[in-house]
Length: 231
Image 1 (cartoon, rainbow, N blue to C red):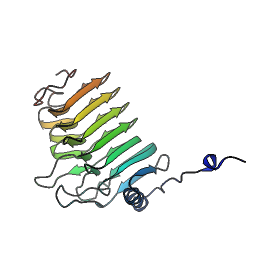
Image 2 (image 1 turned 120 degrees about the vertical axis):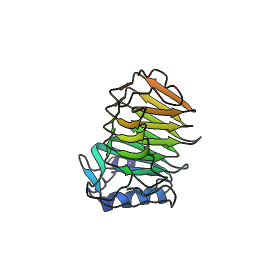
Image 3 (image 1 turned 90 degrees about the vertical axis):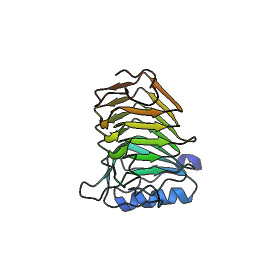
């Protein structure tokens, strides 16, 4: 007989929008937890399921607790026929950890609250072995806008590519902590430079990570210089 702990089995969230939203709601209600995704599933969001009444609509419920998305070649995306909304928003009390998950096709377009096309974060964002791709912000941070004293964005073995914004096509970090390790920020586009990383105050660290082929510029024009970022 195996001990009880060895018999434990974590059920995957069925491959569908309603099931994913329900799982996030349940994790928030429980004070945090792990959402295990069905391997290889693309979760397509057709409508917004979150809105704090200030920052505009978001595809997933606003994340108010620490939640880990345990993925395996997964994608969370906005339907191409859906109205504009970003994919996720993290409250100051929350955290989102994405493992082997791609976030794509988010669009932050609310007038005056159009930062963070993929994710808008006031808390913690951790991306491991994943990607933020093809998201759009009419404001700053096509893939991610991370801001505030408690905010931290940590990317490891991950890619930020093909995102678009008014400024900071890839990542915008304002008064937060940004750490990239063995990661790539490339082929992102902004109307106003920089196209790769927009950074103000806080801290930014690139560990064996590259910021290349972004338009206009990789980091030149960022209000605070990004250490180790060229061009």
